Image (cartoon, rainbow, N blue to C red; front, top):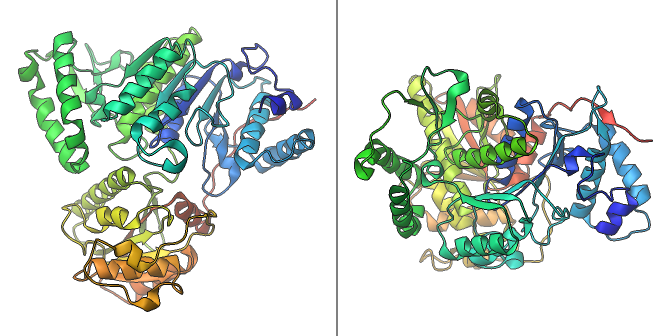
Length: 541
């Protein structure tokens, strides 16, 4: 990668005044919430009048989405101009690889983009692709701040089969003198690995976000007269003994709490929050009124990502000798969006409401469904006369365990209603990633989960979607959910529309589209979803 950088005249990967964004770097890794955290960090810095560059992955519709300036994907013209220039400069370097090429392309764009006033980009935010230590984004010798978001078992064949091994790999982005942040991972091995690597890399500081923030109750509070300038984050009582006692209790209960559904978890926390001053012997300040900030990104879990974004953006502003504008910070969180993650799209003509989230692990599907259940419950309360059908549009990689993922979704908010969805549509995405892992048969999917045996005829000739349908009927024989198979998102949407028109009882569908970012991307492509482009252009001598 260093040789490729020199070919692109990007040898200044060490601090250099000619390219400000390469001097002020925020690096983000983790399993869940990397993109959301990056987008919120970007939004906060934009609201503080800084120009930002963000390299992220994967994309939903166009690879341009990976290369973002001031929160927007670069234009087709800027992408194509940079692509052919980079291709020419790297022509003598074969087998670079797709992700490495896009990483180099993004850095070339960021180094040469100029705004209408001829100013360059101020800040570079890098989201790791996979892991950290050996990721293509891990090529700078320095960073101002970095973080590890929520960890989960993913890409285990590459990163390792335990959270400790995954944490060690992801901690490879730590840099000497940088301030590092993470959340409580509920795994002793993972936390031990993160702390060890922080010490090994001589980071300036390593801060674990407080349990209060982690429990999705991140709050701003007005102090004194309650002016915008006096808004600050609420924290646990400052008494060290109280915090240490709570941290010890939380670490012991962490694993048990992690298996409790989020809706129940949040309720338990509310009860704790109401009585915490009695528990710790501290009295709340009477002059302080609490008001939970409404994030632009939906889902309770986003408060954890927001806390990381705030911490890193404040460190970055401090490095620039720029004061933190708390009103701008709040506005940045409120305005931040991240397509394909807890994204709600309404069809004004047909009346259908689409809930899009690329969740594909057990933890992510849990928080996705919690968001969906809460929102449709709220909508039902607001419009008691409206009738609707709940529909699940689903696809996932055969390398994952779709039965465990589906089990969380199909059983509904109470965890016992296997007929929560009126219809389930297993549909193909417009594109599929190649895989060397054999596609499992129906019998292999249901093995150990149901007494019924799959018919022998189901072994070879079924598509992956048909396999999922057959497995669903075997595992949930009592379910009244109607299950369908579709060859594309286009045909799935046409089917749902015709099905709605033939049934006058239902005025609209609440459609949860999840299981894969490729599926969500296919949906957004189907509805011709687009984003604006940033100001400025590629400046080449």
